[in-house]
Length: 386
Ligand code: SF4
Ligand code: SF4
Image: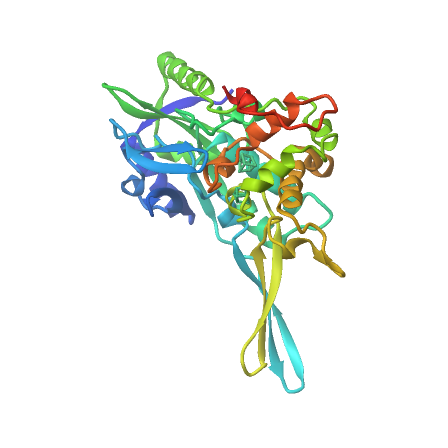
């Protein structure tokens, strides 16, 4: 077991300075555009001190806490994928030289990111993207270069949002894997400290420089209580038993039509999802035709063009696109990557403008089992969440 130590707010500032001194670009939580956004930070002055987030299906708002907690929020719309798998990236450019073109590939970026504030479900999401980008037939060299250099300073969640269901997905709330350091914020009338523990050799090395104090038994007990309390606060739950078979056997369930009546095919759910990885490529040329560039951009299975092949679009209805997304996420992802594609972060519920909730939709399908394709009326499926 790794040794627990304690730092105060000054110690946290020291940690940030050490990381900057070691050449990391430190990315952490900040308040921008009335949301918690991950961005470059230079000290805890940049953190969302005293802010928390209220979330529900289709609802997100920041509100003030009664204390000055630095990690007293849950998750914002951004995930760490925006850094490791950016929304837009130039792949190569071509410059006309006489009658030919010189193709100049973009070199992988070797930036060193230190991600400060990653939650357990988010570390699981990164592990899933690692499988997709680095452990398949084709390695994404850009992702690999950034990932290899990345350092994670995780945080155990001190509270859950009403859209969280990491307990159901076995991805949280306790940080167990994938971190270099992990913090637990302890805040009451008498103290504002952070328990800190290393999760890797790199983390141990950094921790030595931080000059933390050894943790007492009371500190360790407090951490356990905080995590256990968060686990009881899950606002959603999802029964994942045989979920793959459940969804495969219900591809013609009438509930897909009901969802399609509400779904706007806006793709918000895929953009905010920390595991969604699909992209497209676009070529652009300048007006003279002497310079061309190829860009990779995030794409979504909710767009019409996404399933366009010779002869037309394969999934031309909203029903087929939503079904593709949810069945992939919760079922065929298991066949493809040997893991669920969902870590229970709840972002797709919060940021869906019409509040479509996958835990509720799975509940509706499950409650009409076995073999019925009828729609359940009223709020029966919501019992899954109550
Ligand atoms: S499907 Fe929804 S709840 Fe699951 S990881 Fe993606 S955004 Fe989070
Ligand atoms: S489920 Fe919601 S967020 Fe996703 S495409 Fe439909 S309307 Fe948009």
